[in-house]
Each structure stands twice: as C-alpha cells, then as structure tokens.
Image 1 (cartoon, rainbow, N blue to C red):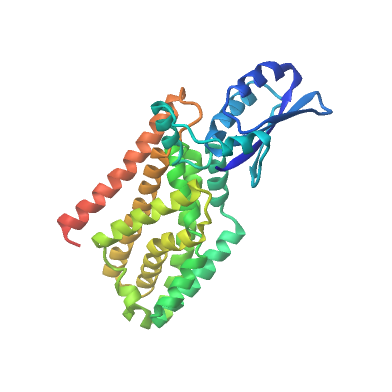
Image 2 (image 1 turned 120 degrees about the horizontal axis):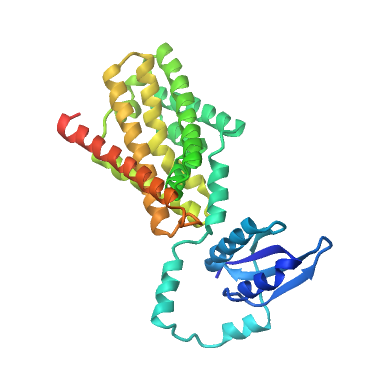
Length: 340
C-alpha cells in the first residue's frame, strides 16, 4: 500500500471544524498535531494514496474560503506502528460488496488530481532545457534518416521531450482548462516547429535522406499508425497516473511523433510536396490519437475538475473532447474515401 504524509497548517479559528472533518477521512495509523508560532496549528496525517485526493480536495476548498491554510504533500517510503503491525498479522476479512467495488475503482488512479496537475504543468513548460533537447533530438534523428540507421533514430527518440506537452493536452482537456491546453499545445507545436526547421535545412542541403526506409515509411498513414499512436498516448497517461518514470514511455510517444516530423521537414527542404502532405497527415493523426487516448485514460481514471458546480468547465471539456474526436473522424474519412 502506498502511503503519503499530508501536512496542513490550519488557522486556530478554523481548527475545530477542520479537524472534525479530517477525522472522517480514512487514515492509516495515527496523526499528530503541533502548535506553530504564527497562530496556526500543524496537522500531520498518514493516509493511503487512494484517499489523498479526497483530503486534498477538501483542503483546497477550505483554503479558498479562508486565509492562512497551507498544505504540503510528502511521499512516505516506510511507516509502521504497533497498530499497523497488529493489523498486518490479523487475517484479512472480506469487504462488503460496496466497499469492494469502491476499492477496485480506486486502484486505477494512483496519484491525486493535485499531484497530476503539478506534474503535467511542469512537463508542459517551454523551457531552455526542453528547447535544447528538441534541437539535439532533431539533429540526431535527421542524421539517422540520412544514414538510414535505426539505432541512431531510436537514440534521438530517447532524448526527445515530446511526451510532456502531448499528455498535458489530454489532461487539460479532461479538466476543461483551456488556458493550460493552449499552453501545452504551444509548447508541443513549438517543439515540432524547431524539428521541422532543422530537418528542412538538412533536407535542403542533403538529398540522400529521402531515399532511406526511415523516410519512406513515414510518407503515408496506415492502420498500424492509429494503433501505435493510441497505445503511445495511453501509455503516456498511465505513466503519469502511476508516477512511473516517463523516459521509456517517452520513447514510445516519440516513435509516433519524431520520425514523421523529420520526414515532413526533409520533404519541405527538397520540395517533395506529395511526401509533405503524407507526412503532415501522419503527424496530425498521431497527435490527435495520442491526445484522445490520454483523454480517455484520464477520464475513466476519475480525473475531474474540483468544482463540478462550474458547468462551463464541464461543457468546455466535453466540447474540446468532441473536437478531437471530430478531427480523427475527418482524418479517417480522408484516408478511406480519398484513398491516400
């Protein structure tokens, strides 16, 4: 069982009603209170990760209503007490059916909405580090195309940071957060623009890259590309949900994004407009499928806006999701009926 430590500074005037509410949440072991020096009381709670979001949602709500609240969340690597040891030694009792269903429902979402939001916001920032990694991955991948060397292209995928903004777009869509959706989309397409620019320059001066299998395989959309992009987006979302290292999953997302963008840039550099169209269609297909599968994973995992009373947020989330689905439907229509 994953445990986390919640520390919250509560103003003394709000202490009694807050502490009563906190006692109603499921807690592991005991919790401790200390008085601070600024007219606030520090409350520490050891709780299961499955219940962290409920506690944080409540604390987020009261923090909006009153000043002085501060909440910090820490991972707990080890925790035991006399009570927890006794509990482990006792035979497990069967849970009631309702509690069992609730337990199964909680198993999917490992991180709280607050943790997920912090993670995806961090990964969707357009930073110098992100830009440099995009530049390096573009140079390495283009060189791999020119040499027709799969190992070099895979190496470029390992350093391409495209998973962050791509998955962040899916998360922002579920929350109906248009501001963050725009920010993540800008970061992703800024990276794509840099890659296109670099590969176009290489394509203009070197013609051998367009004869490689790496290039030719990315000039058309196949059914396998849909499944690849959908699986990549789902894997990326799951890595965020479960707090897993995104490095290996990032390679999978880069497989769907980096090579088609390199192909797109090289074809522009050599004015191969038929290949340019095919590569562009593949890029848009993959981005849409990645975001859509991330939206589905986040939605069924229980990620929701904290204030469901805000109907506009829900409406925006649904509209944006429908927008992405419509794009996929349009792409499928073009592929099947136009016969590209």
